Length: 469
Image (cartoon, rainbow, N blue to C red; front, side):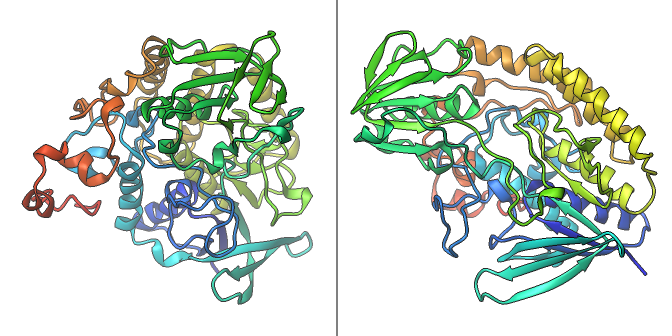
């Protein structure tokens, strides 16, 4: 009897798990009985953009935190799949910092080519999970969000791949209820056009604050103020952008900062991070962690310490993304089928402690990149996932951070070389600061003045509009 595997979520991590099993099948391994639950109507998770904020059309919490005109804030060469390259997908070099639609096309193309869609139950949310220690099986209660119909499923192994960037962390600030303008969390941000001519306050010093702040600048905001809790980001900001320490008080439109300065604002965006939230899991199986590179209680960052039939993918803070999810999925697959033997609880605990001790000693982005590079390398070395030059990718992360420090508005115009194919990216036809159309068609075709209807109809003679060759 084959093992029964449940996968909760068909975002990039869940898609990676499906691909991992398909890769083994192509090598002659038997496929387990797989059921993947996805509450959205399509796969892609965060990358499956919708205008919905808060609640989606089915009354479910909106998953995606992405927005219009979102471009990759890291080089695509750092997230490239080792078994499905950008060259294979697009058939030609593209720029290093594509927009959301282009990356969604890329990740979708790989799994569509793999014929794994048949394992996914779309519009299906997992409501509750139980685990029976006597029988060592999971009972999963699911519900179709369109019809309301409920079902019960039984699995031997369970993979949680729902991510952790969709439930916002919302702090309180004294007097914020008196603020008369718009207040939102980054999760609910869907575009900066309406902030043209406005004075915008961003609270937080994360990637979200940096990216949304510069998006607002690009779209014509009068000013952007970034309020940090611990330390400033310190980039060479445009003249209309400043950093201030943490807000201490709101009085109407005025925000007071801890250094004694103040400012008047039209809108506030909380870029204050996200929470690990798994409402379908009992507390005995739920991660409780801040957003760190190595959450505690996960052996190899994947296997739940107290129950080695439970797996988490993509639960950590991320330099690596898609290819790290692959490394985790290949590792989880091999544990599930018995190809990788899990050590004793004591040895697992010692291994977790070693990683946590190293994590606690990290200083700065370069050491963090080294840390996650070594982590991904360890997972890849344990499986048959295709090897690639991780040292080159690690160096690219460090170059990327340096480029951001030197030119926060221009780093996306840099070109980089693939560590897998050796292909050098092409400069994009339009500088990021001037690129106002983030569609796949415009990205591949060029500026509007060079695009005509015949060109749009024959975007690529080799069939490259839909995302496949």
